[in-house]
Length: 139
Image 1 (cartoon, rainbow, N blue to C red):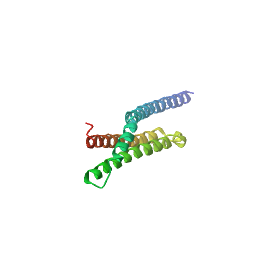
Image 2 (image 1 turned 90 degrees about the vertical axis):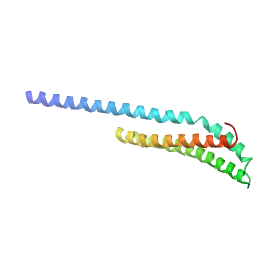
Image 3 (image 1 turned 180 degrees about the vertical axis):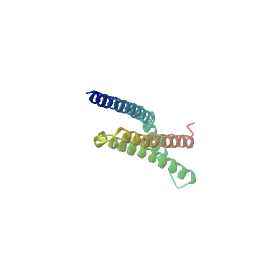
Image 4 (image 1 turned 180 degrees about the horizontal axis):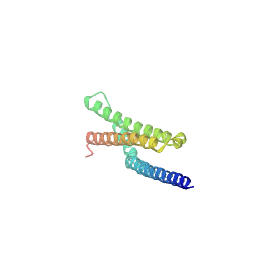
């Protein structure tokens, strides 16, 4: 009987430790996901500005050297916009459906990759807007 109580106690302790690790991992997942979405929420409103700048640049594109500069800035903005749309689609795909079955450590690893991607996206968007605005004399 004493052995049974010892084994039962050890099992209970193991279960409590395992639950604590899951809780810690869940908190890490939630924090990282919040950080990734915060970056997205910061740059998403800039999509309207990107579209406006694309329209302004489109009218200035021609075969002159300056016209080609406008075209490059326009293409950079279009690329930034497309990157955002692709990132959102991929993020939605990665974190729905089958991801629910993955372990928390796998989810956290995926989120770390998304964190890198979304910060690169933020940099690309901000740089393309800055370049276009400078070219158009808006700064």
